[in-house]
Length: 127
Image (cartoon, rainbow, N blue to C red; front, side, top):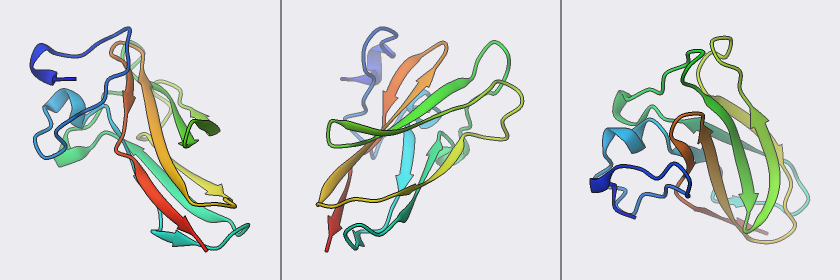
């Protein structure tokens, strides 16, 4: 999708040019931090932060907030974290995850006003 025309409230918003993100994407896309490799059946940390790219933070008010983030291994949902407006200090979740096979991790975040946003995929090798 192109962000020249804005965002889609009723469809998945997924940037196509990660080198030239508009401010709308910078504050909505979830960014995931994971190791490149892990050992099978051993827990590892997955950190997800919504927004904050180039200092563009998402609001956290009763009228405008990030409601949740989801973590997928391929198409399989493996975790979901919910945030509450005004009481959450930023939108960061750290999860302990265990994988048995190589996976592509995908994150999604839901803004109560601007819909669902998907982050950049991260491949992880399981040894």
